[in-house]
Length: 199
Image (cartoon, rainbow, N blue to C red; front, side):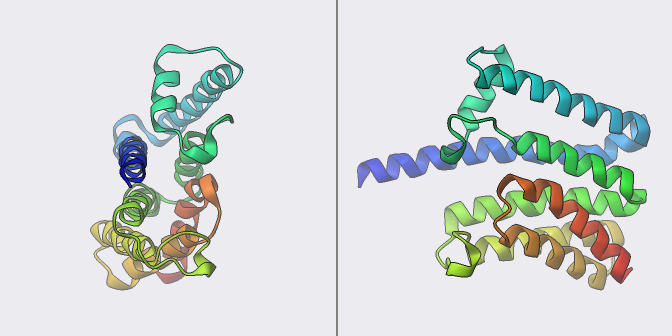
């Protein structure tokens, strides 16, 4: 029992670290206003490129100072011994959203990715009890948290309940499917498309 508690505490600590990094993507809309959309897109591309190089070095047995220690501290058990893809899909999700959608829609979709996905993971880890087979290991509580926080993000941008609910629903659907790290890429795109359909 003690080992299980220790393992759970270690997993929760790693998840908190991952989601703290994940939440940084919420700065992208502000950077886009301050630096311009083209410059922010270039910054995201550069970040994805440099992370990929450093993570490839780590994967091959080298130890780039900062990235290697952060990645090792927050890596999931299923990611052990392989390239950690989540930061790449996170950066690309924000990048494609920024390029494909108008500023207001892009902001709401990126906030849904930052807050909805983070809330889903942490709620699932801490409070997730109901795990039906069709959710492939994910919890109903986590899915509902994803809906709530994504919808709140959408409402903060649009002040429209219908649009907020559409963003929440689209985010929750993507989060509930077994996309693993690719939900970072698909969630903001789905949220952006939901706004176009319902706004």
